[in-house]
Amino acid sequence: MVLIKSTEAAARLARTIISDIALYNREKIQNGIKNDNIFDLLEKELKEGLDLYRSRVSPELDRKNALYNRAIVDILIKRSGEIKSEIW
Image 1 (cartoon, one colour):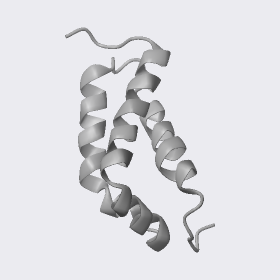
Image 2: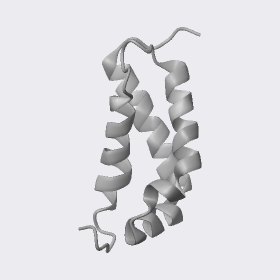
Image 3: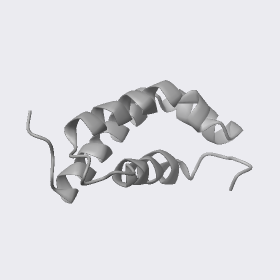
Image 4: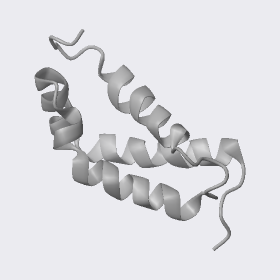
């Protein structure tokens, strides 16, 4: 398999992975936002997603997984802004 070497393609892959995690874990996301433990509740899923991301993206392109982490913030956190939480 050819590794992704385009920033745009890597960002698209990251958003796709995180969107799938969000789609199949809505209850965990709601509880995680409410209780400020979203990363604990989704640890397994986020790790599996990161492993997939790393297996498809050239390490030289995103050594610190910034595009993947950005997708987490944009999709899991920002889109959950309507959930009542003491953290915002």
